[in-house]
Image (cartoon, rainbow, N blue to C red; front, top):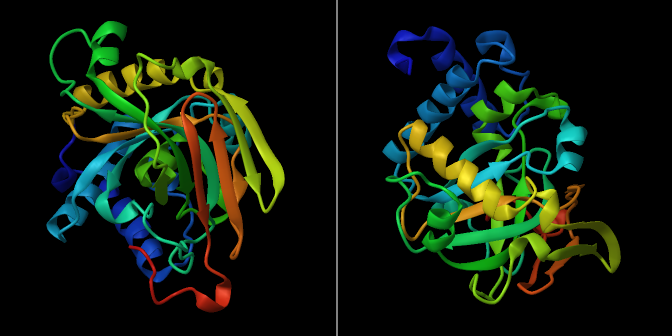
Length: 275
């Protein structure tokens, strides 16, 4: 992999994305700096930003897989999955109202979250090994966001931008793989009483466990293997929808449980912004 200290475009792209997040002002795509399809350089930008966050005191609690559902790929004009890092301050599960003042153009989607009971860094990382590493799973809502203006992204843009990550909410129910097959789960997401998204486990790379196996291999190849205790958001089960202040969201994943959240009204937002 190319060292960020030796690759000027990586530093410049990271600065553009960092400044957009800090100023809560969307920026142009970074593909003019790093190319639209250079996956290695895009992950180098992501790693550069991750290292900055860690130096600032943030803590990694897991990973997210993005662009696993054909519907979401179609929405964003990309054709392959990617992944990003989950930091401790992205978990807003305990908040009664999620602030939106520090988000730029958020959208929300429902997915299966895995909590790992074993590291995934040795071995073939095949289906059996990955399955055995799962301690339990919970229903989750991911609040995705993009620092890129108008969601004008290609694969390199979203990878560099930490896979268009924002915040996440974990449900309070948990189940094990002995009681449910995530591929069979059926998802329904409701906003303010109206069904806005439907899907199933099959929409997530054919099976959320397949998405987890893909991530395990990809993360290890990039030198950041999955670890016991980490949370993995495995990818959307259906189309994502825009977030607006004051909305209430509930998602039901059959066999797994329900997860809900609410967003602060615009007038109440800001002071508790998440960074």
